[in-house]
Length: 381
Ligand code: SF4
Ligand code: SF4
Image 1 (cartoon, rainbow, N blue to C red):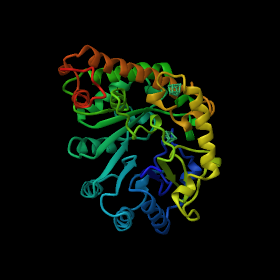
Image 2: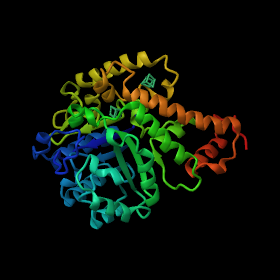
Image 3: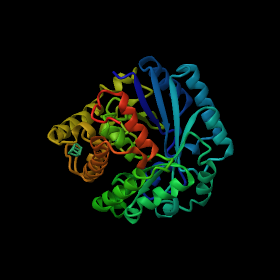
């Protein structure tokens, strides 16, 4: 078993923002359930016994629906049970409750903050975000551990370069991803982007970022694709790095699932209160179900020339797009086209030994890093 695990914890499903594409229904959000400290103590203890290190992602619902004191106590508990240098934290928030006090706390305790926001197009999926936008602008460039995640709907499918420019100009790292036909968006299909339009716009944003020597922000997932094309796949790109047994999601009631995206009940891996070890969760019938479907899909992917970069994509996306055992859905098409474009651009640099000064610093550093790696011997300055 891997000695590193990423654990998404949904301490509550409560959220009053009402984003149109949320993974959770209004009924789930109003349930009021909160994870207990006893449950967290049991979870951290099992993790400590079985893993060298753990990255926690606090998700929801809205994780900052929990009081500030909750996170103080959580960090003390992590330090006591896991010990120093064995854990890290990200809070993925809608940003409404992020204030100076919380930012200082995160800076002092080295907690990453991820804010979901779409810049100038925020109102397409979420209520008024002016206060959040102001907070993002204040934090930009000053807060090392801060990034924005922008979700692209059909209405903004052609606007990816504009959204990228918006965050580039205020100096904030940005990750751009499509609305998936999951949760609330499973019955609002009009929110899901057209894959061809999404691909064109994603490539436009990438080209602008790739060919700008002045840019100082990474564009995700494109930057991860650059690294992967250079032979250095990144585990944080869970959809393309074989996630099973590397990720776990915990609900407020202690139920465990293989992923933070909405999984069917049949993929439940057990409950924190009753399992005796994390490995027991990965031996459950629920895990066998996602594993079986994933293997069936990967067998179909075996002849794909991108399999070594893709690993068959995300099982929950595939489930939502035509069956877990099937490839060829929108996510597969988007990855295939966007990654292939990124790879052609990267290959043209390395094969033609291009002058690197025309590319952004992330690309320059990634290519130069390969100079000391014998795995890439075709690039010589
Ligand atoms: S099921 Fe998909 S989103 Fe979830 S951890 Fe795996 S690849 Fe990532
Ligand atoms: S791009 Fe599509 S077909 Fe190719 S490996 Fe990924 S999911 Fe499978």
